[in-house]
Structure formats: C-alpha cells, structure tokens
Length: 127
Image (tube, rainbow, N blue to C red; front, side, top):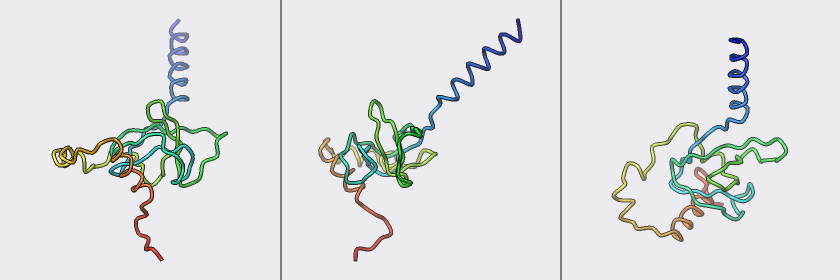
C-alpha cells in the first residue's frame, strides 16, 4: 500500500512539473505584450516594471531569439527578451511611489510611454 501511495504522489508531482511555467519579471518602467515578435506589432496590453509574466514554451511556435512568448493574465503574446529578468527588479515605481502617483498618468499615456520604451534602443547612436 505504501508503494502505491508513493507512486501516485510521485506521478502527481511529475505532472505538476511538466506543466510548470517559469515566471519572469518586466525590468523597464513600462512595456507591452505584443501580438507578434516585433516592436512594430500591435500591443495586446501594457505592463509595468516588476510585473510577473509566465514564459510559454511551445516548440510548434517559432520565436525570434530576441523575443519570449509570454502570458499575462488572459493575454498570450511576445515581450522583448532584454526587458525580462528572472529576479524581481528594483523598479522606479517602487522606489518613488508618491512621485509616480503624482504624475496621474491615464491609460492612454501609459500606452504611449510603453510604446516609446519599446522603440528605445539603449547604447545605439542614430546615424
């Protein structure tokens, strides 16, 4: 009887691990979950620094080496890999919450700041 109980508990544990998804965090002030792996693709939703996202590994979907397929709430899309971290970042919003709240950014402004961040390339000079 003990071996049967161990077998079922081990089977259950292995099933959970097969479906486990890695959680990573957005590292930029604001970002977008895109419909396809391109900075110019339509945005599905806007997320802020420190927001946890689930990595989706699906071998049938080809993803560029610069992008990760993710799930945020009910949205499944793509986030630029350089904006993700395995550890929770030290975010501007968390360090200066009164300042960020005083900005009174509405949804449209959050969207545009996130889009600006998607198009910003650090370390590259314009020709």
